[in-house]
Every structure is written in C-alpha cells, then in structure tokens.
Image (cartoon, rainbow, N blue to C red):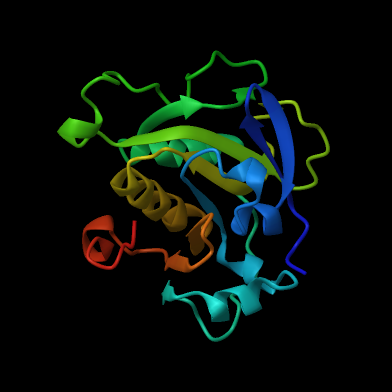
Length: 199
C-alpha cells in the first residue's frame, strides 16, 4: 500500500483527511476539481510509491535509485520560494500569528489572470509531517511534506516547483489521475522543462 502521509483537503465547506494513496488515486472526495500535488522525490521510498511510478503512463526525470532524504523546508521557506518565482495564489491555510496572504500574495486580478498568463497557483495547501489536526492553521517553521494546488495555472506550478527544488532538493509532481509523474531537479529552469511538462 502507498504511504500513509495524511492530507487535509477542503471539500464542500469541510476539511476531509486523505492518505497520500487516496489523493493520488483520485478518491471521490478528491475529485471535486483538478489538482496537482508536490512531494519530495525521496518520497518514492514510501511503500507502494515506486510501484505506482512504474505503472504511470508518463514519467520524466525519475531516477533508478531513490535520492537521499533531505531536510524538509519550512512553511515559510516554501511560500518564500513561490513568491520569489513571481507566483501568487489563494492560501487555503493560515500561518499562525501572520496575516493571511502575507507570504504568498493573493491573485491581483482574478478576472483576467488566466487570460493574461498570470502565475496563479490557485488554491494552495501545505501539509506538514505528522499532522494530526484537520485545522488549516500551520506554524511558519513547520516542515512541509506535501503541497497541493487546486485549479492552478500549470505554468505557475512549474515555476513554483523549480524554485522549490533549487532550495529543497528534487521534487515529484503528480495529479489525481496518477498516470503522470514529473520530477524537477535543482538547477532546472521552467523554460527548459516547458516542452515536457504534461499539464
């Protein structure tokens, strides 16, 4: 069975907890709309993850050996990387003691953002390891295991993940269909990857 890392998703006005396996395999509660998930590439060492990758219809950048685990970035570091990439999004969480959107700005022009190529990450959720509460409040220094983007501009996600990989090591991106997996390595630029980016 795939790893048991828990994710909390806002669904129909309530917080629903999912295992990583449920998120990847698009269970009914996750099928509200299109999402992309980002986990450290060393997550392939979790039970079932390597088997899933082997069965995906499309993969890019997946190594034969799982890379060494690196320290997880903090919530603050993840959001700073996204902002440094020029991205914005809707925070589906709050950072304890900080104003909403203080680290990741909201979309400045929702009505025209998509049509003008704005780098909107959509609804952004961050999940820390060992999270046991379904409350969307997180500490700025909490280590991040998973990031989820709901209804994003795919180009924005690629830019954000490249920025995150340059700081936190290689990252694995996948959607609910579980048939595509894309690894982004440190030093890779979005412009170099756009032709292979499946979303």
